[in-house]
Image (cartoon, rainbow, N blue to C red):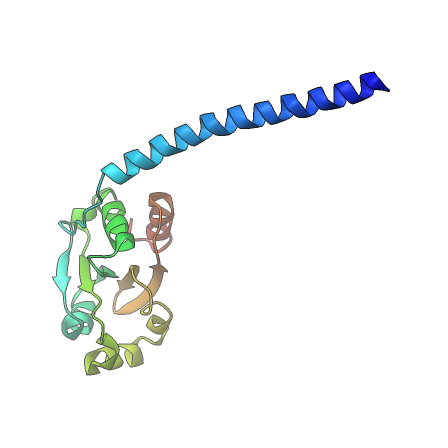
Length: 163
């Protein structure tokens, strides 16, 4: 019986020791990764796009055969991340990409209401920031709301046949 108690206590001591050592090692690695992420500030980059206002939104859709509209708020982290992901897309400069800054009272503007009445599906996407919308031949093809990874964005652009 003594051997059983001794083995039981040794097993618990060894298990707790392994747990403590492993958590110390992994915590140090996680701290290093977090520190590296914190030191690199993410900046908003819209060098690949043209700025557009909600008043000219519908007009641009009608004038362009194919276009991508990126809607967001420049000061939000998610918008900054998506702008950098969009910049990495191959041949992004050759596409018609527009950026629309989402204003606080955009819902009250008449041009916004006209846009939603013309393209009813947009109401599912316009409440999100950031959001990427794709139009072809004056038709809404699809939208991708929220913060996305490069892989998902590329799949979306391939699905909508932009790239």
